[in-house]
Amino acid sequence: MVTIAVTAEHSDEPRVAVSPETVKKLTALGCTVKVQAGAGLRSRFSDAQLAAQGAVIVPTAGEALNGADILLKVRRPDVAEIAQLKPNAIVAAMAEPYGDRAALDALAASKASIFSMELMPRITRAQSMDVLSSQANLAGYKAVVDAAALFEQAMPMMMTAAGTVPAAKVFIMGAGVAGLQAIATARRLGAQVSATDVRPASKEQVASLGAKFVAVEDDEFKQAQTAAGYAKPMSAEYQAKQAELVASHIKIQDIVITTALVPGRPAPRLITRAMVESMKPGAVIVDLAAERGGNCELTKAGELVDHNGVRIVGKLNLAGAIAVNASSLYAKNLYNFLELLFDKKEKVLKVNWDDEVVKGTLLAKDGVIVHSSLVPAKAA
Image (cartoon, rainbow, N blue to C red; front, side, top):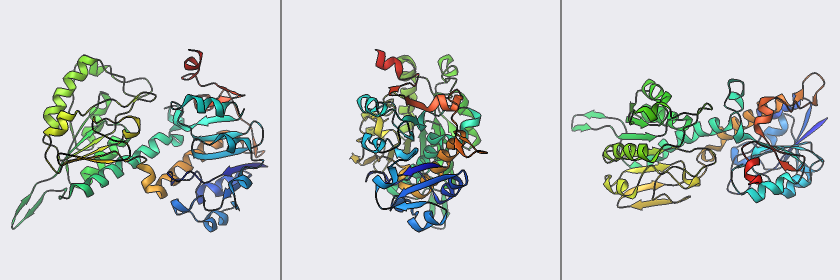
């Protein structure tokens, strides 16, 4: 029987890697799911709820880890945790593959097979396993809700006997999963919404949600999307033209949500100090790229900055702020991925190492980093 360990995350991470629903499904696969007591409490999954669906609740992390075949985590686990698993165990987590290479090498040296869920291929059959999408969707929603609370004015237009309250102007920078959810949420709240993105395919998506599209639509713009669906880094010339357009647009906005990130790179700088200083006092910027340096020049990771009356939110882990939903979706992503690794008939682990989803997410195996995006960095 395959044993799966789930331990509590560090104090700054409220999410957990299983839910009552996925415990039930994992148990049906033939697994024993050992969960450290209290691991799900910050996601409102009590020990009793998890146990009712088949989880074995154990008092300590060590008891959950001891001899387990698989470790499920939200964040990158510690080497000490992996050392307590069976030799050559499987670890699935958001392993931050492009951060702290020395720590990654140390994890690889454990000889566990480490899967980094952020590396999930952007292919149709892997959509249900895509943790970046599930978590970004929630982050986009929360960004708008937080901004609306800080704005301290009404979002929708209101026509009253005493006069008309104008609709808030909301500008979304980056129309990926987080940005599209932010557009939809701001529209539901009645705001006047505009959005920008360097990917040409996003124009139609933005329009379909009822927002105005703002971008320099030249030849470079038409080639600005990778085969995997990510935005390509743009030339200095394009960035200058786009910045000029954005500068004229941003000064009249009440709320700006920035979501631009290219995997493995620092966050692109979209909002300068001068742009912030052109905005009205009371305006709000929520920077979803704060942990990678921020899209706004004045963003400080984990802090709320007030610059001439414009508030800039650099809050980290926005998805974790709605941990009940975030954990539920993340746990489903993990379950859908683990299903691939099992022979359901025999109820045993049977990994097809040539499967493109397995190869695409495999970070380390047999003591070394193996992912194609990271091997050249080590060789260099």
